[in-house]
Length: 175
Image 1 (cartoon, rainbow, N blue to C red):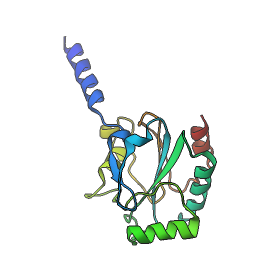
Image 2 (cartoon, helix red, strand yellow):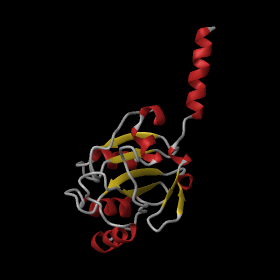
Image 3 (cartoon, rainbow, N blue to C red):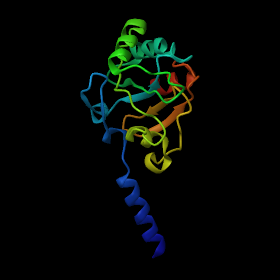
Image 4 (cartoon, one colour):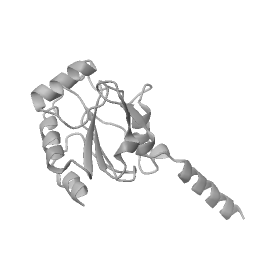
């Protein structure tokens, strides 16, 4: 009997677990952006910064988006100022920088916190196994990448220094 109760509790916890699609965030221009609109797409979630050694990754992220983006894949950037104040700008300044310097056309969201006491709820979910059911994956630096499957499940993460066209990311996008 105890095994059945334990199994029922586990199933109830899993059925109550949120998915990526349960969150609503804000676009860089301040509009609500329900992530449920991305059902059926793989999503690469990246915390970004304009004054980081990895900032040139914007160029390859845009190329990845141009190459594979569409009905089955997208990229979402989340500017964050959590690491050595490398994203000090306002949403407007960040948007201007991304479009003029790197020609970014993939969706950019409003600046958030990706760690600490003021962590955004989405990043709390992305980084906590208790919430996402898959892994603990604290953000180590700017340009850490999270891979979300078509059903809104976290399926992997890629270190900040790993380039957007790494085999791991490209193989995941294509398969």
